[in-house]
Image (cartoon, rainbow, N blue to C red; front, side, top):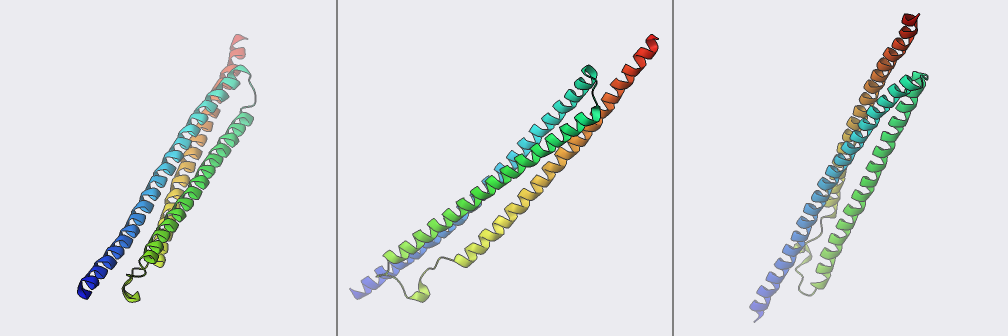
Length: 201
């Protein structure tokens, strides 16, 4: 009878340890999946922001040319205003997107870790009577898991920074090229407008 109880207790403790280990593995997998999804969402958001700003720059170039042709105003002022508006727009959108995503990542990771710790601790508490000796008990690896989370978040931050820098660089290049094209086209228009009265005379 005692041997049966001992075998049952050993099996029960092994099952509890196995459940705790499964919880840790599931938590790690879920955290990795959440981080991957968040990184993909950040990349999509940045790409959309860049695309929107490219469209804005192209539209701004068209507006500059139309304004020069129809109204004949100072081209430099219009181009400077367009550049400032576009750059501020892209910076605000990118920064807001990154901040929101970073906050969501931190909250989700903290909630997952807390839930996992509570599950493991409650499991250990419920099995106190049949628990194995302290040296054989399963303990939630807080230090290792915290190190893993920190490394993962650092990687995510680096990826987001690289994506944002590339996006801002693309927008700046598009703005410069667009302004150069607008100035060139506007110069041609002004040159043609100056030649036509001379030819009429």
